[in-house]
Structures are given as C-alpha cells and as structure tokens.
Length: 343
Ligand code: NAD
Image (cartoon, rainbow, N blue to C red; front, side, top):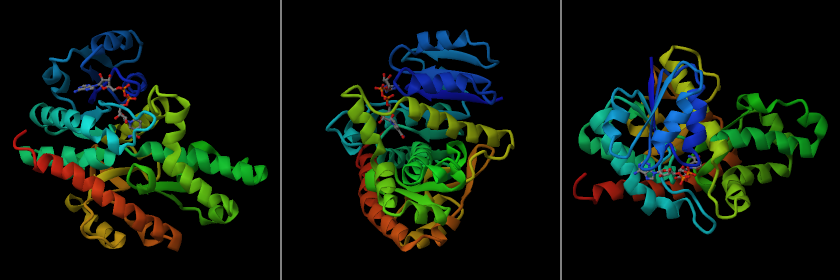
C-alpha cells in the first residue's frame, strides 16, 4: 500500500499528473495539495472507479496531506513564460520548494521526494540542503525529475530517422526507444545531454544528429512559444512524471523497471558509485548529475555509471559544456539555503 502526495496538484502539470496517478494500480492513496482548488480536484478524481482513495486538501492541511506519504511529487511553482528562462524562475520557485520540502522533512521524513518544479538544476540542491539542515536527508530519496527529456529524445530520434529515411524510421517504435537513447546531465538547455546508445543510429542520422541534440536540449522552448504565454509543458510533463513515479512505485512492489535506463538528477556524493561518476565526468566538484539509477523499495541504491565509460568524443564535449553551466546552477541553489539564516 503506497500513499502518494502531489504538492501543486491544481496546476497545469499537477492536474493531469493527479489523473494519471489516480489510474495507477500501484497507488493506494492519493493526497492532493495546492494553495488553491485542490479539494475540488480531489473530489472530482475520487469519483473515478479505480481502487485508490483520493483526497484534496486545503492550503492549511499540508500535515494531513503528507502524513504517511511514501512518495511526494512536487510540481508546485511558476512555469516558464516567453522571455523567461528556467533560471529566471529560480527566485519565484526556490522559496516554494524550500517551504514544501521543509514540510516533507517534518511530516514525511522517509518519503521519496520527486522534484518537478523548475529550475530542477537548482531546486534539487535546495531540497537536499533543506533536508540536510533538518538532519533528515537520505541521498537515495531525493530525485530531480528529468524524464521529460528522455521522453522527448525517444520521440525526436524516431522523427529525425523518419525524415532521413522513412524506411529506417518506420522500423522503430517510439514507445521502446529507451533501449536506444538516454539523456544525462541536467535539465536546462546545454546541460541536457542526449546519448544515443545505439551508435548505428548516430551514423544513420548523419548531419541531423546535431539537430537532434539541439532539439532535445531546447524542445521545451517549442512548447512555451506555441502556448503563447500560457505556460510550458504540462501534458507531456504529466506523462513523463507519472511514468517516472510508476517506476518508483514498481520498485516498492519489487517489480523490474520498464525503462532500461531510468535517469534522475541526483546528489552524487551520497550515493554508491557517485564518486566514480564524478571521476568519469572529470570534475570532482560536481555534486549533482542526472544518470541512470538503480532502485530498491522506491529509493536509489546506486548509480549506473556504465554510460559514462563509453562516451564518444562529441558526447564528452557535451558533458564538458554541461558541467560548466551545471556548476553555476547548483551553486545558486546551495547558496540560497546556506545563506538563509533559518528554515
Ligand atoms: P502552474 O502555474 O499551472 O501550476 C503550479 C501550481 O503550483 C499552481 O496550482 C499553484 O497554485 C501551485 N503552487 C504555488 N505555490 C504553491 C505552494 N507553496 N504550495 C503548493 N502549491 C503551490 O504551473 P505548471 O505548468 O503546472 O508548472 C509547474 C512547475 O513544473 C513549474 O516550475 C514548471 O517550470 C515545472 N515543469 C517542470 C518540468 C520538468 O521537466 N521537470 C516540465 C514542465 C514544467
């Protein structure tokens, strides 16, 4: 029996994410929290005839929301608008995540915390430093959700193969492309590093390989532009977030993961193989990176570094570029907590 809480459940991401998790057989109780409208959304979803209970809580009921929660997803915060980068969101979303993670530390200290709010590269360090300060930090329990980058990479890779040669493209199945591509690094622009693990496809893409990389890195901008001021990815994010959460939930039930290389943005120094990852990234000061994770009972037990051992020269270049930007993003999040006087 697993209780899942969604903080920010009334938003563009939160609502479809809540719906998808209401449909999940792995959830026994779904607790929805927001500063507005979550009670109504909870009531609405509670009429769906799946076996989980679903309750929406008002803004003063964070303690009841989190009581006994084993998985907490956080899509609370302001989304990107035209002209706003993910990093611009920092000031607005840093305080929100800090206060929500403080509540998690108080009322659900053993929960797995899945940070969706942006900028992930800075907000995961905020979550980690907040929990560290409270003496409640467990490195295997805090994850930045970067799965949308993988979902996009799987889609775009087939799209480009189709463009190049429909005969090759038609042989591929978008739903199982995680066998041929993954994404590591961070979750904004050039920190996003798509890795085509089936190198024959790099060869087939030829010049479109660079276009593919760019589209995965900046795919979020397409949505921000197309929505014309109404926000960023919501439905595709909800899909990616629900898929990621389901992998965590499957591991509670000792089921094998569906995705071969499930990745998350994690705190390297606290995890098995974290030091090895830093060595392979060739930067021992980099504390966070998105990499394939190994799960047990919903927590990360180790990082799989094998992908870093077989990077092509172009991929190594992408890692070096990503690390420069990531270091700044991480520092920004850390210092937000370290320079604040009290929680
Ligand atoms: P939204 O504005 O539609 O929804 C945000 C929700 O958060 C609102 O319902 C708001 O009331 C709520 N909220 C604000 N402060 C809160 C608090 N203190 N406690 C609880 N709830 C609070 O935004 P959205 O489009 O749903 O996006 C949400 C976040 O997810 C943004 O930061 C966005 O950038 C991020 N996002 C991340 C990814 C990713 O790949 N990780 C993808 C898309 C969006």
